Image (cartoon, rainbow, N blue to C red; front, side, top):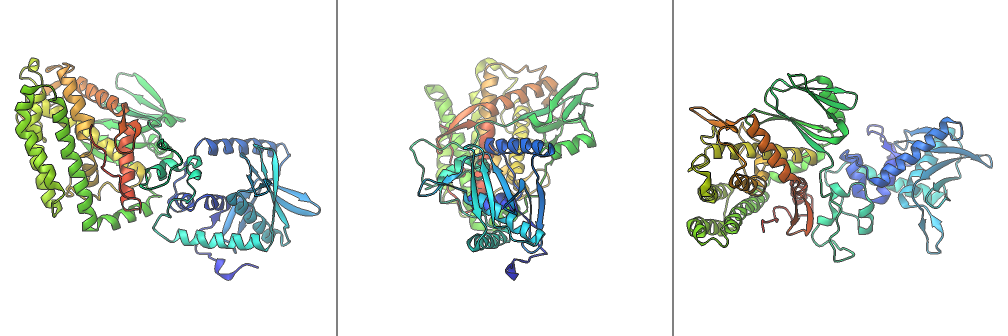
Length: 554
């Protein structure tokens, strides 16, 4: 009855529901069934509500669902309903939407829906050892029921789909985007797939297609108080301070949990965060990233592709040029912008501006990543030397700095820079883990014990816009107190508790600000911009290159 090559007992069974995704888009099938990425948009959630209502009716005795499995087909599934018509048992599936229409404007099933019910029918035949002549799909939006004949054509189409599913399971390469761009706006995985960010992809109008959400879906919780404890009660994270005060955060509203310094978290809270996809990040009291925890079980294919791609010296050099050019040009444009209309300031910055412009021109000709690092380091020296000229005279000497000192920072200005860059490091880390890449495998920065190379690579795209610019502006507005916000020792300067709170508030506020991406013509928050750049980086080795690191400060 079944072709022998369909028998694949060593492979895990395929969900019949996955055939619906395969019929809709091969990439959607791959993202769900191979990479394990399950996302839900409003249409998916509405479908779940419909099935929850049907489940309630089933419990009242009005419906009969059934779990089905077939070793021969390598399929499992749960059919919505079994009914008896004219002596035959018929699988019955419910869909929230409306059916397709044929050339005669008659309702017909969508290709994915058809494959799904054919699979149920053939599993039912195997279980009952009797023929199943047809299956039915009820579309609730139009209250129409469509019949699907289980004939030779139906069996052939299912076998072809199963062969394609098996082939896709065995490859590391994501399938290309569907040829039908009208499917993308309705797809639950559009925010991951990013079909609107593929150069040369046809669009139906001159307006940019906006599938990537402009804002974060949830909040970031910072826990700063030494000795605080993070626990959980049901689906609520509870943060208790040593003084007995407590804050509560429903876990579905939390994107990430950042623990600064001596903060404790219970095992139960760890399990709840992992279960709900909340990443946890440990930072030192001075803001330096120590470790992160995020679910990674379904990221094997993505990381193998990353390792293969970044093992290519030419691709690594190409990406390094893009990042170095973006960083130096951002530094140049910021200095140019802030000195516009101020001839005295422009005069003080001119040497650094000329040097940055010359270095930027040499980036595209750099023959190695070592040469690029030399250019980037020289540019950084000019940039930080120029930054001190941007502080207004009324600040006095408290915030003046004449050299960049990192570990440890030797003055207040460097303490602010280092703390903000620590926050940026964690923000980039969160985005990398969310996309599913390995932060330890980069292309520009060399690996060393203290930091993750890929995080440092991507940080260079955002240092100027996400921290330098808001920090300089806040200093010039005199928002920092030289005594209350800093702790000074003979060997280092670091932020006090009030200083840390101000820095976190300034950084988080910046992340929520919107800007119009100058290349993509797409308005989104800076927080989403970081994630978008990580996804565009992955596209560089996934067959859809051309937009990574193209954004520039206006």
